[in-house]
Length: 220
Image (cartoon, rainbow, N blue to C red):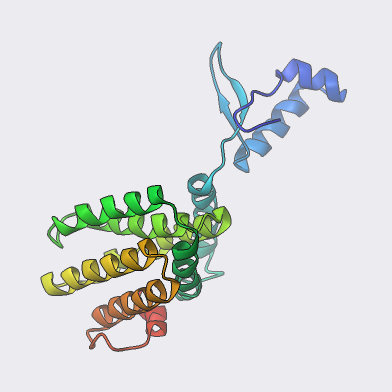
């Protein structure tokens, strides 16, 4: 079956597999809980194969990690470290694989960031969208989903107390990342991303923005 297709009815599935409708109903509940199908009530409803792209996959990964965080099995520092490890090569890959549509989408977010004050509540979602779009420009759905989930869980902008100047610097760094990607220059995209991560770490720790990005493991 394809994504979006409707599954047969409970009665049809029961007949097909030679089991009771109660067994089918319980199986569908289990599959729905795993995020693979959506169940809609009503005369035109039923069970449908879920459309799963990078955004939906990111939500599923984030939900699983959030539950694991609540149990104390993993911590935010570990998540931040993995995000940092993935984000730099993702910027390089985006510079290689991006399309004009990718560049336009990232530029639109940057244009919105430029006209906002650093205290605007829309800033954190825009920051998340910027980084997600960079990851999506890699055209590797698994990488985009992982970074989307990790960014959602770490939410660096919410944890960093920017001044007006440090916020402007972060936007300038976003511009540099975009230019590296738009020019198809992986080295420039990597340098800009490293500088951005170092800046976020230094602002969070109240230190000069010359520290290595790895310090973000404790800060973000």
